[in-house]
Amino acid sequence: MFRFDSVTFLDILRVPSLTIESGRITSLLGASGSGKTTLLRMLNKMVSPTLGEIFYKDRPLREIDSVLHRREVLMLSQTPVMFEGSVRDNLLAGLRFRKEVYPEDAVLSAMLERVRLDKPLSEPVEKLSGGEKQRLALGRVLLLDAPVYLMDEPSSSLDEDTATAVIDRITACVREKNKTLVLVTHSGAVANKYSDDIVEIRNKVAERRGV
Ligand SMILES: Nc1ncnc2c1ncn2[C@@H]1O[C@H](COP(=O)(O)OP(=O)(O)O)[C@@H](O)[C@H]1O
Ligand SMILES: [Mg+2]
Image (cartoon, rainbow, N blue to C red; front, side, top):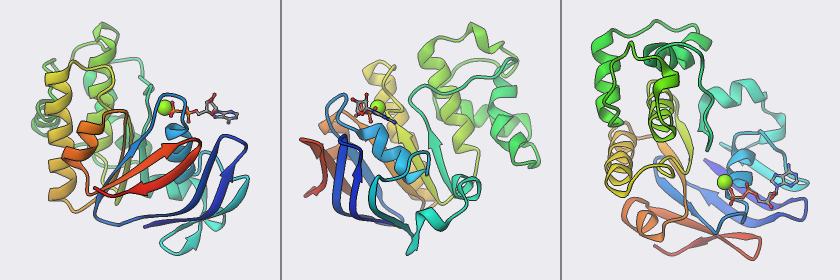
């Protein structure tokens, strides 16, 4: 799905050679500040390599329109944006941007259940905690259909039990629909348990590690 060829971003990160396979779950591991978010942002064309080339489906990413690319390669950022309004408004925000038909409330409620957010659809979003907002943003992304999902530490502000349950459901959903997922995590245990492939950043170099 993605191929990195001698990529460098400033003096922050090097990706000499890396392939991210379609239909698989890839975990991206590394210490805080190692460049995980930077690598994810390169996949989403939010940042471009200083040197080298990234290919998406064998096409150079720099030749692909950024807006169209981001419809196919959906990113859940570490600090998701919330919109004023209710839980429902925020779940529908992605679909609104795409001018897509809204699903019924039953579908939205099922999504809240899936991401383990026990709040009514009418709840004002400013009443949610950080971890609840993170799960709401996750639900918003999962309502959108795309071949590739990039998730930047989706469980970072959740307690361990909730984090496990949420990752369980994300990965089940991704596998069921045969999607490609790149999951940033700082947990080796999560990476080992849920992913087909592990990419590790060490000493500013990203490389595939044997699972
Ligand atoms: N656009 C940028 N320009 C300069 N430095 C950046 C840029 N983006 C990130 N950095 C720096 O790169 C390093 C890696 O950041 P980041 O990718 O956010 O790490 P991680 O997600 O692994 O915690 C940090 O030191 C950060 O300050
Ligand atoms: Mg980060």
